[in-house]
Image 1 (spheres, rainbow, N blue to C red):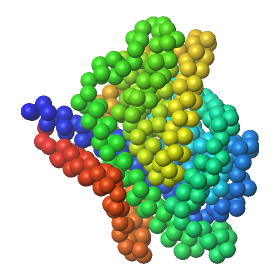
Image 2: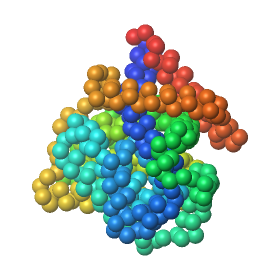
Image 3: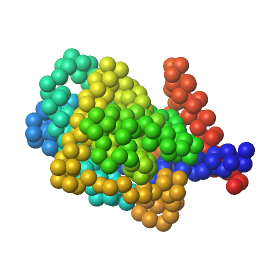
Image 4: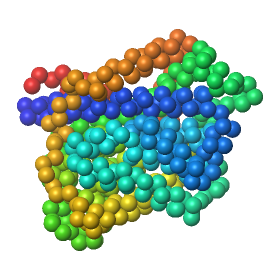
Length: 399
């Protein structure tokens, strides 16, 4: 019993620590999303990102590069771009870039995994975008895309383009920033349950599930030269492992280090890292944004390109004799999350901004509703509340 309580406490602390690592990225992504929704008109977005040309895709990739590395926040920003008139390919390019090409993600990968994985992450991010461009271009469901765009616009609310002032005037007005605050709160409202459950499950798995379980999932792990079929199978198992350990593109890097330390191949680990956009919480949010058919279409596209990219990276690195050798990854549960570093100051800054926006929104429009009309929403709310209770009790347990 004492051992269980100790593990419970460690799981709760791990969950809180992982969220502490990612909070500022969440807030930054939602701030960018809210500003895009308020200040960028649909006509301006159509001109800059309306078609799947090289310029539009390049611009979307650049915007993603300077944006958040948090998957949930990137989803919200992508929906804003898509609803404002961006083409499907540029919108998905932004989503892929904002979770694979950002600087802070490379820093975390370098700390936990090494330079080869940093190169693989950035080169792989470009591969993902190029392969997505080719695949969507070949299999473009025009009617499905238009229905999804209409749904996204309805979720965003009416732009009233004839009444919206120039963005330069709006960005200097109190009314404009009040709308940003309202959108910021609504973005958090939409995903807080998924985030709470996802991070809690990740902490539980990190503590209670033995590492041997993950090693057993990846056939051929630990072998010096796994066969092509073993490497391919590891690429396919990567998304499955990510499904059970999903905590976002930043938080899953320590778990990737656990896999690396247990001999999983370079391709399997890269597939695992790339899989932050093909798991259930993300799928559910995509379905809320665009409908289930469009969400499943995006899921299928991402699954295909991440497996192909992981394979290309693995054998490309092998041809150049650059495949990394397994070397002691740091355990998630052994990481010192709460310390004085850049994360502390970024979190404090974005916490103050978030509290200000929440207070402003409550003063102007009242508390947001919980949206419990659907049975699925009520179940999710119950699970999220249960997760919060698990974290509260576990964190306070004396050990």
